[in-house]
Image (cartoon, rainbow, N blue to C red):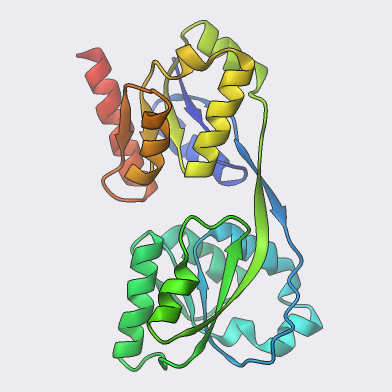
Length: 253
């Protein structure tokens, strides 16, 4: 029996490695494809800090950070507020020296920025550079703007839905050889549902546990009719793995 991971590449490889270390057989079906967007900064604003809600935003700009244009902006010298440890690690790898880590979601990142302003670590009238994806699930810039910050959002990448499931995954659903699915975002969950429907495996795909990184992601699967949907207690992979183990124990009971 296999665990299906729908997380995009390259993060899905680390997830698969962690699952195999726990004794699971893994199938990969990345439901979103990473596409970088060229960074063009036409603002003359001096930035006080950078905010990032995804490691993909760092991956998208990393090749450009040593180019003369971006290098002259001094981005690597700015404090960077990362949504969680995974994104923080990507920022450090890209060369950012001062990385502040929030609690794993956009609300925690907003609160971390606001707390830094209260602690005088960050000036409240600072202009924040938000390195973001094309599709935002939350208006973080607007929320910080309402608190007195000036936020300039730069789209650095997009995640395009993958419209088909790999053949081994379809065969796995048909043979009832997949025992759970891991979901990491609302958009990837929707792409998974669309692909499963198009491939004619939706019924078997939704008949098994759907383990989700958050309740927000879980709502997509519940709305689609999945009966065994579990959301992680906190938005991090260790909590998601705990949710998976709980789901598998329940199936065996």
